[in-house]
Image (cartoon, rainbow, N blue to C red):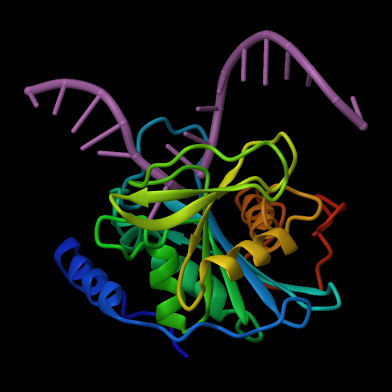
Length: 245
DNA sequence: GCGACAG
DNA sequence: ATCTTGTCGC
């Protein structure tokens, strides 16, 4: 599988988003605990106050967690080809995130992405887009909704509350740790709400952010800091060993 | 026109 | 995405 083929302009992207939103995907049937779960993340230069611009450097990392806890990862850096435009995140981040994933020895069975899915002007945010493009069931995780609205959940781990756009439920708040800020969970490609909830809880036993996404974020920041180099990194054990990658 | 607006 | 500041908890 090769990288590329992303829309290169807003009109082209919107057309693709409308197409994806109109498709019906068969639900994924996998069992947590026996899958390779991935996370992918990109960070940008520190100290900038304005929204991202075309040409900004980005540092991306993907992480794959095996059932036995072993991990693999891949890091890549590059310039982003597009300004940040809400609703068009795929133009800015899609290509680099895909590159990071395709560098892994094998693709994940399930993927966490730092983006929305159905909570989107055309009901096809980057978490859905990336999963669809690579044919990997995907779950989006964000700090806040893009368009959806809904009350906050209770303060206990596992509590949820629906997020809707009009009458349509597009995602949900999920408290992953007692008394810590909830996350927005966006069921993406081939994932239903119940499975998304189970999966996020499975990967947040100890931390607020699902472990694959958390490790990918750590690695991308280490790459940005120059503490690790781009390309293959294998058998990392970053958890509890920050800076030891 | 003005503010909001995943990352 | 990123920064700042102060504050709380382990």
